[in-house]
Length: 240
Image (cartoon, rainbow, N blue to C red; front, side, top):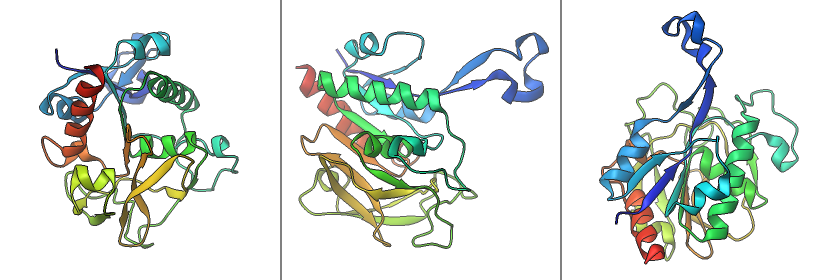
């Protein structure tokens, strides 16, 4: 059977949809999953499942063969003992707690994890690392490219030799850049896999090579993307 890959996502009040939601439903909430994550898993040969917070995390992970921690809001700086920067973006404390628990359960079970953008940052924090809470467009490689189509590459990254990242994505590649936060200090048990031209870490992985984290959004680039192919292939190997 194809491996079952769980996808984390956001939870918003229905009122954020404005006039698209009738008054009778304005007090409800909905789970938000961008379709590109699931499509990328399917193209890589896995079976994607969009996860809900309304079940026990350990019971959810017990059914999974792999996990994708997706992009979204900033991780609250309280998790790395830092005061909030004046340009800290939206935080979602409940999502923080849920995804930290998902990650811990996935690690305990030994299934592979692909962490993307916010997921990259959350995993670093889970390992005791810290983040730069805001960088401007004119700093370094120009990371927060909010006005450019996410399917367009805006800068290149260089994978370090003899790393998991290099084996997965090759020596270098052009990527999109949809983040205003960067890695400050690397967490314990993590190895740098790729850097941008300004030296900012764009990928890391765990020493056991069961977790691959990328700062860019691979689901918006190549199809099937090699990072998702790595996740599905590793999930099959672990399951067998």
